[in-house]
Image (cartoon, rainbow over all chains, first blue to last red):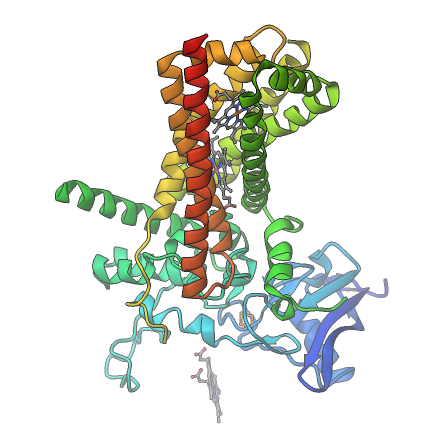
Length: 247
Length: 132
Length: 122
Ligand code: HEM
Ligand code: HEM
Ligand code: HEM
Ligand code: FES
């Protein structure tokens, strides 16, 4: 403990950060860094300080800082969080382990490949571009029909990292994609036939075992687990109705 | 040991991702229990099907077997089996209900309530197993 | 982009749930009958025969056998399908589990009918 500043006393925290660079830091290892933290120091603050003053080769992703871009998802002490709002002193230990998200290919250090994750949205009926509210004349990029999105989801990939099934089966659509599909169904953006064609198979909505960990870690209250279950109810209702109509 | 889960073999990944409820919440614990008890019950079922084959050998074959099964150690295993059945059965009902989109917001409460029921039923069954 | 049209439709989880709900009744009955009813807990040979000699009981036991085997094989399939399997491996898993299920089912039905006959002859 050092000085008593405006944001409370400072404390030295040890960060154990997973390091991996193909060909250079390979096999992966944990590097240990020490930082001074007060009540408002976030994990991302600590990483930025380490990069600035201790090891400029440390790689991590971030953009906005206030939990709105979904870029800085990582596992802190074994639990998925946004580094930019996860406070260091609230992690419950003086040694804080920082690791990349699971269920996505590892590129280097804390950086994972977000491509497989991002590819789950368009077929689910969700485009990644925000609706242009103030500028109706804005031109849409090539290949994009309209600017719409699933408001609350910040596409951080945290839900897939926490999902026990997504960790072992990369073909599983996963929480975010299934939640987006449910959204497209209830808003009528996609027809039931289209949505069910996307989710009604062994790597789709049926793969979920209701662990609900996606909802537990979601930083944006999307509650994807609830949406998967609701989607399944719609699909079961549809199947039962079709069965009795035919019979 | 710094092997990121992405670099592990599918089997090692499964062990880590399916059976470790540390740092996770109630629904994940339910998932882990469901998986362990499910596998346990399948193994039991297969062994059981072989064991009841002894009935083909008539009273001589079966009744001596039953006598060994009444030893306290085997009865203790029976209690483990009953625990597995109760946990799996009650959790199965929970998965069915929330898996159809009902009560998803209160799934944790449902889980702990059902597990409390499981403990009570287990205590009663264990008492029956050892006294009857 | 993943091609979604090729994925085979499924709904097997519904069967897992339906058989599960049936098992609540069937398995509870089985456990109570074989463990808690007769004096001394577990049934002797005579007591097993006395129970299974009832035609209704044989039918219930056989239904239980079929339902529990189906549920168990679906459960193993559900676990294996959480692994990164190719479409070919998935087909193999389904076939292998179907085979195991049929063997278990055939053996169980033979046993139940054999016990029923013994009981009737006694
Ligand atoms: C008084 C001066 C300025 C103010 C108040 C200002 C304000 C802002 C604000 C509020 C944003 C955020 C928009 C968002 O969140 O999407 C923004 C974005 C940005 N600003 Fe500025 N800005 C100023 C000057 C500049 C200058 C001088 C430059 C470059 C020469 C610049 C380049 C940018 C860029 C590249 C972005 C990102 C645009 C995007 O998100 O698409 N700004 N600015
Ligand atoms: C007693 C009543 C039972 C009920 C209500 C029940 C219900 C269920 C349900 C709903 C599931 C699906 C879980 C999911 O979606 O992830 C399930 C899975 C499973 N069940 Fe049962 N079950 C019962 C008995 C049994 C028995 C007797 C066996 C074995 C012989 C068994 C073996 C399994 C297996 C292996 C799984 C897969 C577990 C997993 O996915 O992790 N169940 N059960
Ligand atoms: C310790 C508890 C148990 C005892 C003492 C017991 C005892 C027996 C006995 C004596 C039989 C043969 C007579 C009959 O067919 O009714 C039998 C059959 C059977 N048991 Fe159990 N059992 C127990 C638990 C279980 C469990 C947990 C399962 C499911 C996972 C199960 C599944 C079966 C099946 C499917 C049959 C029917 C086989 C057939 O009739 O061909 N049993 N059990
Ligand atoms: S940096 Fe944007 S969410 Fe954390």
